[in-house]
Length: 269
Image (cartoon, rainbow, N blue to C red; front, top):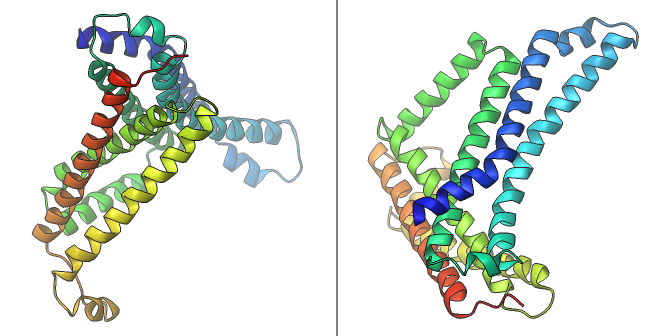
């Protein structure tokens, strides 16, 4: 049944995202061939060519920012409207457990977020022409990751990023679910719950960070001031994995909390 929910979620959201991705890539191609920055640099007076250049550049950046905003809005809207709004009456009549609804929403949100970021990167590469400078910059980033985390960092870093992203999405779901417990001003209450969960998470992370770096030795802050402090690849990976485990812990707590509210405290009135 989970596979059917995932199929339904991707089908319901694909119509929006695919059109946005096509629009973004199309405008990046247009700007690549028009080369608006070159036209504006060579133009001595405002004319039709300059006007079109401004329009194409502006439209591209509007679509680029729009993709990121719509991704965030869809992440929130699909959970709130589909499960806690009017559509919830239908969704919870299905022979599906609440945790399956949460997982389907989470997987869909993670996939579309990653695809939105990849599409944005591709559009920028197209816009810039994927010149040797861009390729060299990507190579430098890869070398930098290897220098800090070693070759394993090319795997651990993306995985940790996905885990952290999932935790952030689950925090949003938990905040919405908590806000829905209020009888009035539920959207405002959800914002308040998100702020509260964020503060709790940040305080806990700061505490863990203090404990972790304290174990490295009493000379830690002195070494940092002298710019002589560094972590080995193994230590950097352990730090990254430790942060990922904290994200897993928090994400699990948010998941269980959301599941409990949907299962025991659901109120669609």
